[in-house]
Amino acid sequence: MTTEPLTDLAALGERFTRDPYPVYAALREEGPVHRVRIPEGTDAWLVVGYELGRDLLADQRLSKRWSRASPALGIGKVSAGTSMLSSDAPDHTRLRKLVAREFTARRMERLAPRVQEMTDGLLDAMLAAPDRTADLVEALSFPLPMAVICELLGVPFLDREKFRTWSGQAVSSVDPAVRASSAEAMTGYITGLLADKRAEPDEDLLSALIHTADEDGDRLSGDELIGMVWLLLVAGHETTVNLITNGVHSLLAHPDQLAALRADFSLIDNAVEEILRFEGPVETPTYRFTTEPVEVGGVVIPGGGELVLVAMSDANRDPARFPDASRFDITRDARGHIAFGHGIHYCLGAPLARIEARTAIRSLLERCPDLRPAADPATLTWRTGMLMRGPLSLPVAW
Ligand code: HEM
Image (cartoon, rainbow, N blue to C red):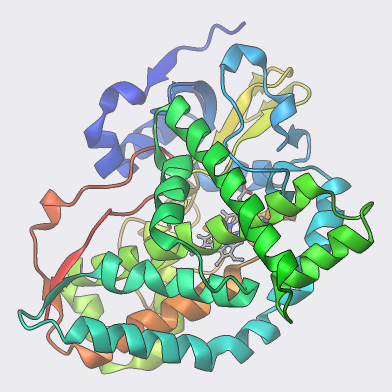
């Protein structure tokens, strides 16, 4: 039980989905910890601001295991299988180690020419449109990360539309029943995918993971195998699609920054960091539950499975950490942002996401010297829920 007043974020509806930053900033003015009702329908403890938020992401008194959630929250697991993202140490350590070496920055850099090739192919198709307009999400932001992660895993015939619907619903729907049924459908689908791969193994990551599970069952259970594939497929594209889209959206909305990048493409890596800071794809990370009372900035969050969310989007715009934090400036030092999380769950795919974003954004701008929005930005529809941030479509013209 708690006497903290409750801020109903769900009641803010569309206004909060479209532009959550002023809401977070107003909360931050009052203090770092708030009792909130989130659009997903549950009550949670929301932590705003950089310093304490970053600390909490690495605080292992908070558990990522769904079984730790207080029954009073009324929430169910929304992922398929058991993954590193829904585990604590030492299970987490074991699961992460199994794939970590596949995702090192060096290994990913070797993929860069292939990412460029795929980008070029997608842009060829997009630029063939006779009316010189396209939805950037459909043409580039979605298909690129999806193709890259499928190729990496060795999933040649993924039914991408089906997969995309389930995956999108599982991470962004505000209806718990829809989230649960998508996760269930996904489990069935991945099980089928694994069966196909077992029948026809290859030199790819999926075959290697199946082999690990089959030959050395104590290291990767069937449930963990499904969890790993689900996590890599979902994390591999749900996030990067928004990094590319949010990046192009932010650049188009700030013509001076777009001009600066066009004038000097060596700024691209810095620009990607600033996009991650200013309009990162993950607004609040996946759920964490208290295993004991945790004191944060003078407030004691009770133990017993309370839901704790860190407003990463707010941390990255905290003026105490980033001067003039609400200004989009591709030349600033944006390092230290927590768009990829912090601590043991720090994003495994960060090097890959960076390569995809820099390749997609730079190639798009190079090939479209006159790229411009094809719709009033105020009419864009943004993803619901507090996990992911990005517009569902971004009409552009060239
Ligand atoms: C811009 C793109 C991306 C962003 C912003 C992003 C963000 C994040 C964040 C914030 C977390 C930590 C979540 C938490 O602590 O609750 C995370 C974890 C993770 N991400 Fe990413 N991600 C991106 C792309 C990718 C890609 C391309 C992959 C592909 C493999 C990936 C794989 C993972 C995995 C496996 C984890 C779990 C790590 C663990 O639990 O140890 N991510 N990501």
